Amino acid sequence: MNTLKEYLAKIDDLEKQKRLENIINWIGSQFPGLKAEIKWNQPMFTDHGTFIIAFSAAKKHLAVAPEAVVIKKFADQIAEAGYSATKEIFRIPWNEQVNYELLEAMIRFNIEDKAGCQTFWRN
Image (tube, rainbow, N blue to C red; front, side, top):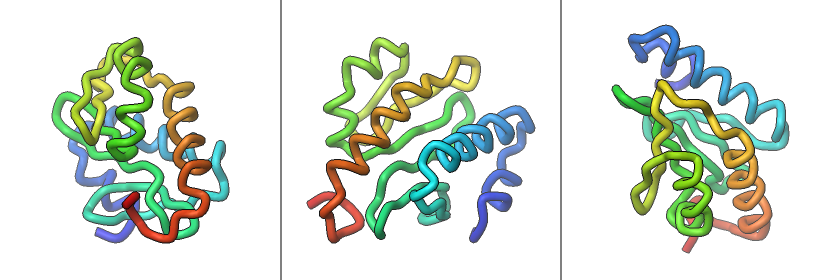
């Protein structure tokens, strides 16, 4: 799988396809310096070759992966948004609103925190 269109086409539900496409387009418009890529069969954004955020469509939710450091830092806001989380991801149920302010804060944090990072993942 090489493109976002190919990834989206694998999502059976058209509403879920559109929702993820809208989120990805929103990130692209808010953060034009980020590079949208497909790696490990999931859409993600990188900055100067370092990971910023990734998404994965599941049956009941959209999994958002900003790295464990970010999940820990934003744990209270994730819970306040009504999302469940693990060490590495948080889940946006398909039937719930997307908290764009939270996504923006996480992305901004990663961009700033990883500005000098020379590796894909944090060390």
